[in-house]
Length: 307
Image (tube, rainbow, N blue to C red; front, side, top):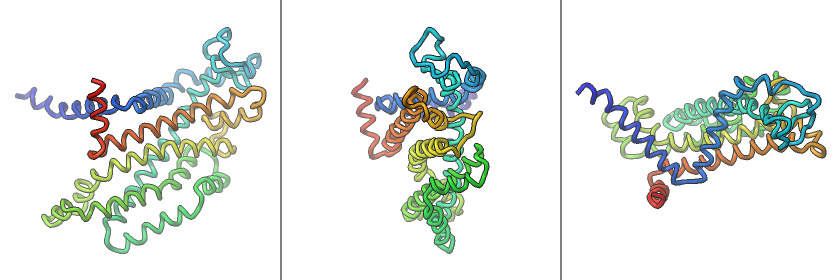
């Protein structure tokens, strides 16, 4: 009996994971996207530990080395940059800063925006009218222009870039969460919990939050791609991460003067940005279907056909 009590909580979690994997396998493009993103995450976590010294080692004899020349070593399979540093190693190491900035900005904006949206949506008083005006104020400035102005005044460090990008994305989560809460709070199960004397925090986190969480997660997946592109744009303009730190956008900017003679300096990091963004969009589309009970049957039927 003791063993059953210990093992029983793990069975539902294992079943949910198995179901999620089956639904993912039913969507082949989303499966490929998930595998690619897993590789990118592994590069971001372990890349600096394994290849940081190699990525910064200069070799002037290998300046602008062409790609696919295996005679110079497997690290130069994608070519070398203007200082002879291997592009493959630099792309792997740059994944750490790029993913850290995108993840930090999305997480901060999601937490702050969702919390404000919950308060604005559930509150029937003055807070419900004042908080949405904050989103209107932020959205009145173009997000990229606001980031450019702030980063010109502040030091373009990782923390400042995360802060600026997070501020510009708060209205997305605030307005979406508020709209979802305004609709959910009028449903019968919320009214029943209110009549039975449930407290406001219990109603919000126990009854409302599980209903709107799938929408927030889907938006966060799409927003991750947008923030990554915004960071790449800032680095391309020269106000993002500064050398000796490196991101994919900075690598594209550094290769711009050599586009006519060494196109691979900008092509490979740009290709990684495109593939990562595409993978996030495919995974977001899969999440939207998998988390919607009215649409999930498409994946379930696809999984049965494959079996």
